[in-house]
Length: 250
Image 1: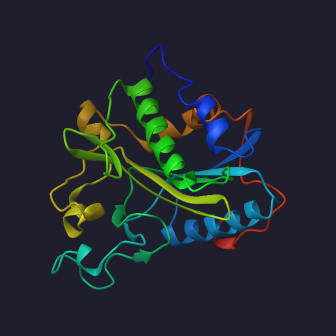
Image 2: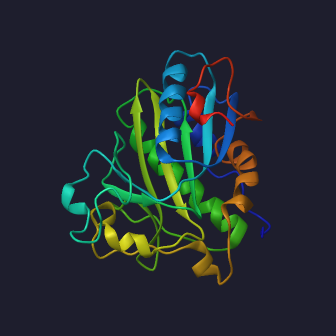
C-alpha cells in the first residue's frame, strides 16, 4: 500500500501558523456511529478544549447514511422527488460550506484543535487539511488529487474525492474532511453536493481499481499527525479528564 519517499509535508507550517499547542494530541477512532452521536462528542470536546481542560483531539471513523448542511446549505440542495421525508437524516450544522453526504466506506476525520488566533485561521486550517490529506493519500496509494481554487475539496478529473467543511469558535475547530474510499455513490444523486450540481463524486477504490477500506487508513493517522501536523506525541483514545455523552462512549 505504501510508496517510499514523501512525508513531513507542512510540519513547520502547522507548528508556526496553525497549532497553538503542538506538543500532544489524542486520536479517537469511533468505528461506525450515527452522525448525531459524533456531533455531540465534537461539541463536548470543543467546549473542553476551549477551557483548556484537554489537549487537541482528532476523531476518525464512518457514519451511516446522513446528509449535513453547512451555514450556506439551502433547501433546494435536496433534490425534489429524490428524498422520502424522514428516509435519510438531515442535520443543519455550523460548519462552512453547503450540503454533503456521509455513508459507510467514507473516512471522516474531525480535528478538535486549538488554533493560533487571527482572521485567516479558518482558511489556513482548511487549506492545510486539504494539502496534508492530498499528500497523505498520494504517499500511500500513488494517487494524486488536486485542490482547485474556489472549490471546497479534493478533485481528480473534475470529480470530487473529498469534501471539507470546518468551523472555528473561540480558536477551537470542529467538523472536518470526508474522503470517499469505497462508499456507495448512488445517494449523491439525491443532493446538490457543495453547490455544484454538475460535479459528481469518485472513490479512491474506483481510481485505484481495487478496494480501499477506512480500516486500512485509520492506523496510519498517528504517523500523519506527527509528520504532517508536527505533534510531538499522539495518544490513542479520548482525552482525560473529561465527561462525555454516554451515547458516544465505546
